[in-house]
Image (cartoon, rainbow, N blue to C red; front, side, top):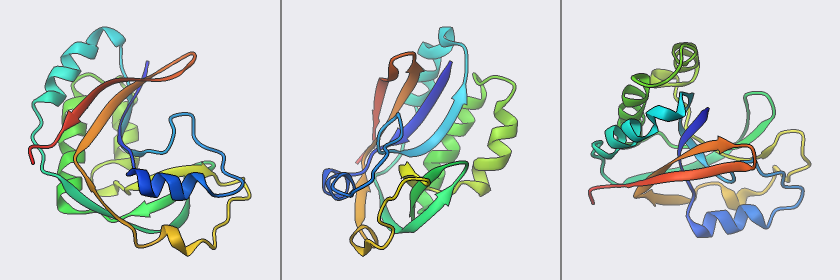
Length: 165
């Protein structure tokens, strides 16, 4: 089963994005991936318990610019603060204990030093207005992240995890 650890943009930034023409939202909605992986759903409770033990401080993100990512994703690149990077690494370390055999290949390509924080906003092939400067230079404080799993009918949020601050 596919799982996603992520955080969402604040309401102000979300509203700015959602007002754009030619938006083709990802199935999981506006989000910034901390870790994506596959595991057996029987291990879900243990993973949630491990993720609950991760301590993190609120961290600031800033939107840097629009870019294409992966196969067909238009993203808003985000700053990579030390706090964000440390949270990402802790989540990956916890997930590694439960993820399937494909995880290491995904981790080498996208995680750790190769982690490129971004907010997935639309399909690259959409006619999204890339000239909108109103999305660039926005700051947000992230105080929680979530874990969700992919079901036939879409993504189901499992648990929210909150910062210490």
